[in-house]
Each structure stands twice: as C-alpha cells, then as structure tokens.
Length: 146
Image (cartoon, rainbow, N blue to C red; front, side, top):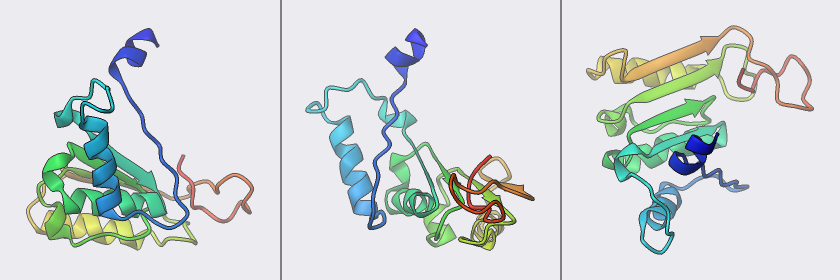
C-alpha cells in the first residue's frame, strides 16, 4: 500500500444533479494545475462512474476525448454518440437484470463503437446475467456491480 499511496490518486466526487461534461473536465483541469499540488501524469487519467456517474463519465470523455486514457462505465444511465468516443477506449459493465438502467444502453454503445471501427480491445462490454442490487434495495433489482 505505501507504493500506491505515492503513485495512485482516486477522486470520487458525488452529485445529486447529474454530471455535466464541463464540470468534470473543469475539475480535472484544476487537479492537473499547479494549484492542486498533485503529482498527476496527465497521460494516465481515467474516468469511471456507476449509473448517473457512468453516463457522466462517458459524456466527459466524449466532450474532451484527448484528455482521457480510457473510460469505464458501470451501468451507465445514458451515452453520448459513439462517434464522439471513437478515439477513447471504452469498457462498459452492466447487469442483464438491471431494472433501473437497461443493459441495452451499454450494449448499443459498444456495438456502435465497434461498427465505427473500434476493435474489441478499445470497445469492451462485460455483461453479467445477475448483477447484485445496491445495498438496501430488493434483491431482484440488479443495478449494482459485482
């Protein structure tokens, strides 16, 4: 763990209003600035999120694709045009049993990326037959991530 403490930074902001790409990218601009005082390698920034955050991660990557090394979206609650993500590796995770956000969102995005020329290494999809429910939800509501 000491190695990770010196070479790994995780930032996990929360929201109750959705993620606007400009907000996410402005926040990263600050983190990369000298004012933040963080030793961040700008070429190794990844964006990820679950549900609303997954959609926000995809939209942030689409708004500024050269900024992100890759995007990982878990049960994203929306997706941008695939063409806007054509230069950014994408890996989506989704449960087929998701009753909150249909897995079709992830499936269609990855299909469109591949149809646009992305190979399987740059447009990945991991589907779970039964993703778990978030803590406190009925067991049949699969909107969590394993």
